[in-house]
Length: 315
Length: 288
Image 1: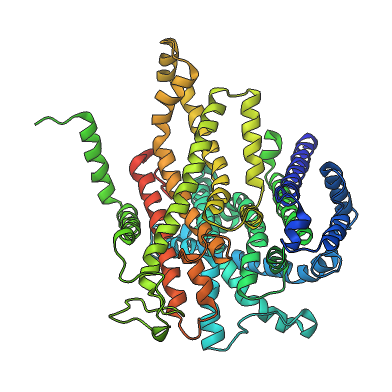
Image 2: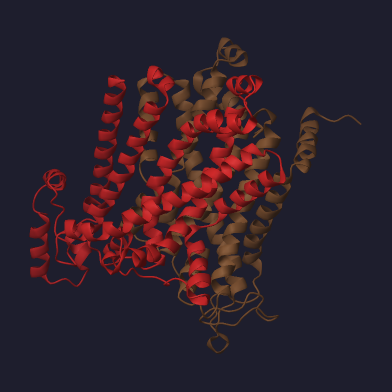
């Protein structure tokens, strides 16, 4: 177990190092002169020189890379060029929108996806099963940003039940904040719930075919109890991996949905940074999101081994 | 009349295929979209870029089957040309994944256990760990938005998919007798990979290719939606959705139509992939 953990930790670190190098190269080396890129062609020479000093461009790339990494490790994410405030402050504000959005979507994904998958597997080859499978096939094909536009049209424009976009801020009350995040979370969650339902169904069908289920039934355990007590619990193990992957997808996928709803989250920050060529902000926010995604995947793998003792020995 | 073995196989393929509802519906939907894309080369009801401001934001009518947008451009013509954009970007991206990924996978399998195998597989893990959407946004934002960069951004993430698949499939083939026979006959690893392994994993690659194609369509639409895909005046479904978003109260059909086009394409390709899997490899038929 210890050597397994060490191995996973090493590969987590390697992933992070490679990701940071890729981001650094793409942002700082590829555009040629990042200062010129940020200011455009008509930049004044003295503005350019000032920005070059602020970015530390007179240093070699290797030094700049390590300055960036060590800064981030100390919580110093640099100063946003357009906002003139520390990126760490911007991130701290925006994460209050992005993290609840990802969590709420994940909750909806699980609440919808798991029961749908369990019902479909329990009533295999029935009309219910066919309906669930048809719905999931459709759900996978729906682009979440299109679904988001449809939700805005129906629930905000026609019915006026929800705001069409924007975020009131948590200080206006939890309910208003929740209301602002509900449509975006549904848009993010439904396609993911479709995937989860399919995974849950096939995992449960695999488990239901196992010998120990037949044994449980043979010794007189009712079908429902065999299903819930033995099959579902075991079938959930592989499903856990998918839920973890989905959480990281929701974190990253949120950045498009945030644009649909004009939510002031990390995604909006990224896209504004891109259009305003604020490379300092873009570099840091993308690195943080990548870190979050890779770290969540790491936690899921660890949890997977903790839940399933069989994997511990193999690992 | 005697039929060759190949002709018999083809016959059997179509007979099984016709019995698979997934295959039939998927093939029909996919064919419809491909035909729309091809049709747009020779005919569209209007010039897709021709503006006609007096007739802007019209609903569905005999003159404009799917209405007009905020500049009076014909939506149906744009959807037809948009099919071309989506299909070409996704197709080339999958081609990139197959073209780089399959040789890497075959190489890793032929040299299984070696350092090269290890490097290829760890490299794949790294790309997998990287959130695809974020890297695609990063690439297109720095290198400039456009169809080519969208293709590269989507294509990169197809490489590990095909590398892993072909390595795993090739590994199980390397232990089989007919490969042993080929080696005994003096064929080298490269020749065996191309002449014996590749034809035997082709079915798997076709099925996976169909699925990746549908994912590519979704990814292209997402990039175009945030303005990082094909640039105007080239119409694309994602861009149409972005333009329609602010007008949804006035002209909801502008948002509904491109969305349905994307859904039909992705649904068609996914069903086709499922159907092909059932037809091409009965052993893989998902009993589930």
